[in-house]
Image (tube, rainbow, N blue to C red; front, top):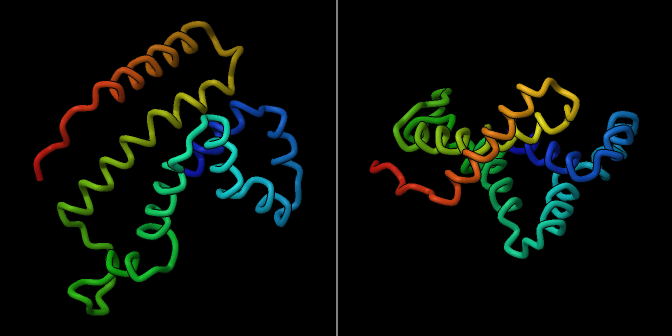
Length: 145
């Protein structure tokens, strides 16, 4: 989800790159449109020197999709070879917080790729975008564990 959201954000800023992304070879696509390139381009566009996108991507990669010790901890129980994943309150909460954080913005970015959508849909996307910005500006205190 995070990679798709970043890619949609990238294409929203540089729509001329969509054709290149679609038509390039797999090896060139990994070089030109891999996560490192996309994150660097977006952070450069936003003047983000803290590299928060890269930090979020690295964390999710470590725990979710790449073979790492921390990732293996999610698929074993009590350091034994039982196969998981095992849902516990900490992992479930982390997942729900992350999916809530990433789904809204990715959906809004996806919607911007259809500028000639019916007016009703465009207005809905704009309203959702406004609500998301407002929610992020006034972040509530995290839920108690």
